Length: 330
Image (cartoon, rainbow, N blue to C red; front, side, top):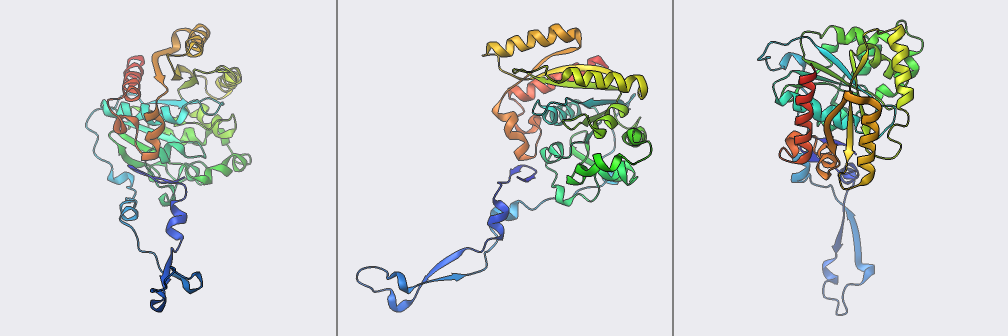
């Protein structure tokens, strides 16, 4: 499925555009057949399809470059680089990356979101047509392209994006033979300190070299955990990886916060998971709980964060509350 900003695009839309519709044409001399139309007199004629109004509405807007970024209206303080990470998939990493970044932008912060997941969900979830992206985070890490040349500015208020494309899928293998392979992202992001209040890194659901790059580049970690069975499964391995990186590559690395996602207050299971996670991690767990809502699931298909798609809903209010907590933690 592909996405364009503000409009959901179906899985088969491209097939429909490429297909030439068959039109049924009846020969004039056969129109007066008493018992209806004789099937043998029907011809199928292939004719060129006309573009529909809907297709014209789906034309993608050109992607802006960093030089087109709107001027910053406030003094940026010390930049905080936060990796949003969990080796378990489907816990709300990209959802949190998009919506927390957008919420911070709306309260006046300058935010950069780095999409480090080869699936590129943060990019498509913000309405970026990846086929139009010339350079992505892959080129920053492996081809030494300056990160400023890859940044797409002002995808939302106060929010810039470093997109990912399918090219990133090969980065794990290609990084193996590279010098200083663990520091590639750190070197790139380091040049942006002082230009953004927050830099968030949306990590892939694995503990490979891309994730190690994020751990080395980050000051802190934000760990989303879903309120479901096996919630803490795999978190122990993640913490072990964090400790190894902290002892050898990034001494300042620590946990910024643990976020509970997909919370359903109607179920006993969700409440039990909240108690278990808070008992395990203590005060570093955010007070804000991210609910499981239909609107949060729908928003990415419209290429919008929840703060734009459903600004008065529970999902948007939860991420706005989370943004305030993040600012309070400094």
